[in-house]
Image 1 (cartoon, chains in turn blue, cyan):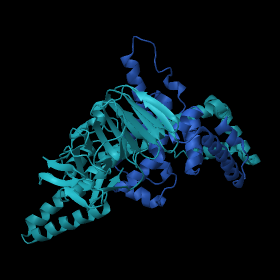
Image 2: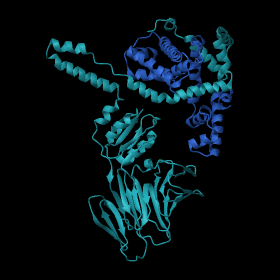
Image 3: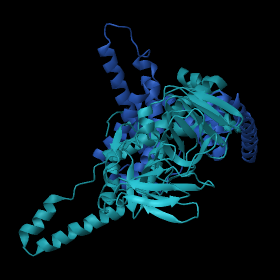
Length: 194
Length: 405
């Protein structure tokens, strides 16, 4: 997960207005996951949410605008994503007029602000995991994020169960040290491992 | 720009709240003012209160993170798709036309301008591999050929050009016919057993017939060592790399293939493929017909046709796969690449061996999977062009292939 924007705010905003492809790659790295997460929370369909996020970024490319701040830029992208998601739900309801409301949500149920907080929070938490050393990150990813049983995770990493248990132990220890350095308790650790 | 109320806000507030929640979640103690801010936010709507409750429950935050993870897994692939959709901005036509219509000699200047613009564009956008590899001289596919190493260490190049007697080893005549090597025991009883090795470099494959009549197809970057006459109770050969065997039946002398340090394949009369490249994770033996017994790391399994035994040296494990796609396993021998559900690095290792190239990854190995078959007689450039349909990009520097996401 890329977290750092290699651009100064002003330079990025200018590069976006000038259709600089490198700036759009950076824009993608920064906002794609959050936009998909946001849209997915509204429409409950990952593939569709991925398309919506991509289309939002593409719209900007097709009609490039010079924003005053990255905050404004973000607001613009989220507004596009919200509108596209709600349109999609409307379309679903039309298609499904005679059946039950399969979306399980009505427009008024969706709180945009609260969802924005949630997707931004998930980005920050996920970055903690992405920052772990590779060998430990793999353990967390397989066990926790992909929910694999230990035996399968060990097979996937091509190591023995014994080796895997050791690595998991070391991952927990490394996380503890890393988090303690930041002056953080191991509450986060308990979230990750149980 | 959308015209509703959202375009006027910048959501700095939401970002700030997310940061507070994140710090709280990772165990930081918030200041009184910050706690108050969170409390105010929570009381602002039922949705906020619900979110706070959600992230205080470990099971539900686990689920939220899994959702994020599933999104992240598709990110790289969708990014390639997204970047491919960004059409380069058009060079402003009207201005060029104006220059041309004004004075004729400006035409030259305009051409120069386009040239500079193009150069500048390419400098700015070095990730345009479609042009890069297509402009390179074609890299030809591999062909038949091998090197024969005799018992005394002398070597000779085998290719389709020369037919006839190659060597005479302790009474066994070695003949080259139509690009394939055959041993002819010639009736004479020999004294000592001599060992020969046939090896293929990258970009060559070869077929030979062993002294007992067994046919061996040797894939690129492989080697097989065998006696020039099989006199004992066993017919033992060693293999590096990949080969397909059609073993001549002989109940009295089982045929044995040793691959890697710990794997032995015992055969009675049968056809099977062994892939034992050291840069693959497993030594894979796939049975086409008959029966073979695999021994590795104190384990023994007997394969039935269409089963595959995978020996993993790194973990000293032996696993049997059922109903293997044997067409895919044998594609190399039948002049094809079969990339069905193959990962990018699997595909690249096959190309390395056949086109004698070196593959490097600019930014890790993209998680792309492929499908379909490609004729091995294509040039490398043709194959790359086909693969680019799956959203990977390539550049060539001599025989170095650079893979870009």
